Image (cartoon, rainbow, N blue to C red; front, side, top):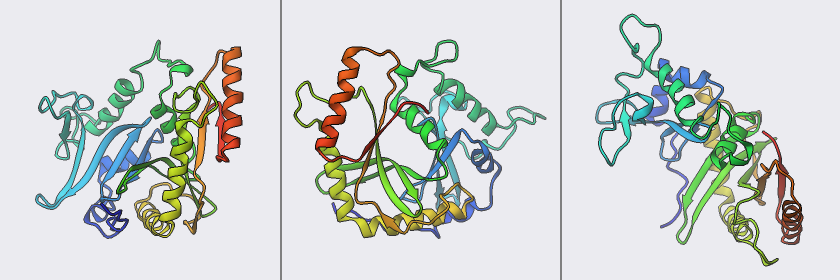
Length: 284
């Protein structure tokens, strides 16, 4: 199947309706722990720590915005065994009970933060060595709004799947970032042969080279849509594409051992040998 980049429509009805700023949309936008992404099929996703809070689309049949969220965030039973998400546009901006100033969308956000972020916590704290890649990704995104433009960019090529974790825009230059924890098994073999991550970064580079013009046009449109909705965008609109994808390694190891020291050294040597653009980060 050929890749197309022209399905994102800045004039789509969903974006016109969101510009009217329904309360629940304003509430999502104002919460600094949440982040919002525009998708190429003219849908919108709201995330917390890498987990989905809401999926928004415009229903042409009912001529309105629809909001889907997990049933547990609404404190309701699942609609079916195969579907855990409920369309809640008719209730999300209503009080949780009569005469209450707290709306259902406020409770949704509250439950997301207690049900989702605390699921691996002990006394409210998740040990750094147990941080999931999704948690790291979401935290990096909310703390880097000055240059972060997109996340979870995905396309199915004719022969393979492409997914970029984070899309940066620094001074108008788009860079696609792959995030991995240092202990990820795809990062290093027992021998010094090239690990899986090398092939992945090479495939990403080939994809970027092949579709540079289309990617730039797509991200210029996405930038304009986000700016028009009042969402955070980098200061400079995209003007070019960095041909080199970047590997961001998050070192969440807190206990130092000789084995881990050797692991880090071998990993750095191999990435340098393979001419991979990378950086290592140890904190959020």
